Amino acid sequence: MRPILEGRTLAVINDLSLDEIVWLHGKTRELKEARERKDAPALARFRIDDLFYGLYEVFLEDSTRTKESFKNAAAFHGIKHQLLDVGSSSINKNESYADTFRTLIGYDNQVFVVRSKLEGVCRWLQQVGEEYAAFHGLGFVPVFLNAGDGKHEHPTQELLDEFTLLEDQSWDRSHLHVALVGDLLNGRTVHSKADGLRIFKEVKVDLVAPSDLAMPTAYVERMRENGFEVRLFESIQEYLACDDKAARWYFTRDQLERMPDEMKSKVARLREMTKFKEEYASRLAYGTRFYHPLPMNKEWPEIPVSLGRTPLNGWERQSHNGYLKRIVLLAAVAGKIGHDFDGESFTSPTFDYSFVKEVAAGGTPKDYSKEEDSEGIKEIRDGIVLDKICVDEPKRAITAYVNRVVRIMGFDDMTHFSGPTNSKKTGKTKGYISIPNHAPLSPESSEVHKLAALALGCTVNVIKDGRVVTKIRLSQPPRIYDFDELACPNEACISHPDNHEGIKAEFLRRGEGFDCKYCDTHHSYQQLWRR
Ligand code: NCD
Image 1 (cartoon, rainbow, N blue to C red):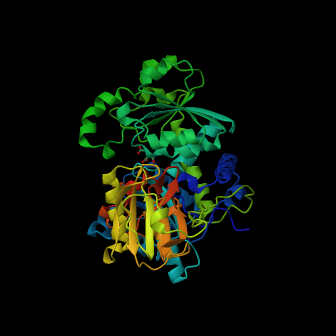
Image 2: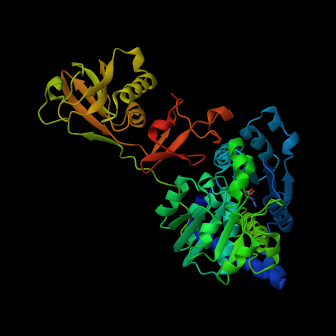
Image 3: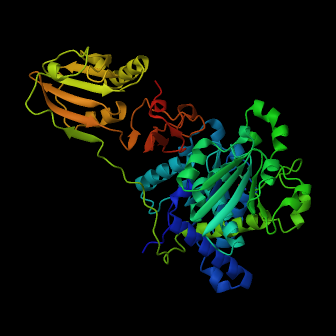
């Protein structure tokens, strides 16, 4: 069997199955114990020890722990380690990420640790790397480890945080009660927790942040979907007054570099609501422990320096565990370990393609104009009629929507009639497009698949000799992609047009809306289109 994580990119924590995460924690524990015993043969089982194996670190934002722990992990492994000098690289000559990384892959590098302001970078580079490797017949697939992308995720930090939490409750995964405190709006380490903490069976999360820095709703919803109990508190002071406080507190610093100026001016006041004070310590339950991904700001540390030498200090061991966790992660993606994994592995989502359905065209053939229950639809003898577009929406919205379908499908070049109308049967507003003499369409045709993405929920009627001969009902497709008019609305997304990486936007259906394939932000269908 192939080692379980060999060649696997980690863009978000959900790129690993729960069993894979738990397996990684077990291996980290094994390594930590071997290190404490100074058991050289056991440690050697983790070492990659290959001079032709290369790790490249590309940090477009500052870092001490993440960058240096990977560097030290590379030294443990006896592999080549390089750090791109970003400040003097051609990224400053407006070179694309894709070109920069293609170059570095070509210098015998298999693993990349990437930190960037832009979100979704590793998902994009995974694609770039796969194509490059296939084109040049490299015989390996480059791995991209997300070391923090904007406000999005920090999956390797999530792994070391979980490991430390588990260590502190003797590897018991049955429950976790944790408070997340600080700038929950901009801190990516806490965002990875929305999915990462699923490794615990019962999870209670207390979110302690003023509303200006509150956890984005999408993550709160994600936590609730994952079955977590979530409670919200405005400040530490309010939280201290509650009688079932968590014994695990996870702090994050103010992410000043991600705040707009107007927020920065408020931050001194907001900070008072999430900064722990020494005098609060007596109000904590026995056994309480604090964690922090670090760094802390030396002028206004979230945790007073004096508490560093008390049993509250979980953050220094957390940082040390980061080094061990990254040794293990590198061993796993290099395929040095992973043959013994016997759990459930990650599987990519499968798509449900039943969004195009042919339905009965209606017993005995009828005259289309009579069968139709609408006003205003131009009667045609041959061609197609797209009906029931945007049912029950305001007329202006329907007009804009219908015009977009006409433009993108190229119906502009044909004689066509379109607009909003009212259903005679139900009285509801809806849009229609009728195109005389358009060639018949079948459920298999690519034009119909395109229409499913463009005209959500519409019905395609194929008319011949005044009768509906084929009726196709379209529902939401699982993916929307391959249209130049699509764009992720998140300006920090690597695929956003203003970032000029030349990436075609792609969205995956989730619930009522769609998630960007790259940055994961959730948008309504209407928000996906540029025009
Ligand atoms: C975090 C980061 O950069 O996201 N630090 C880290 O990786 N240890 C948190 C932070 O900078 O606040």
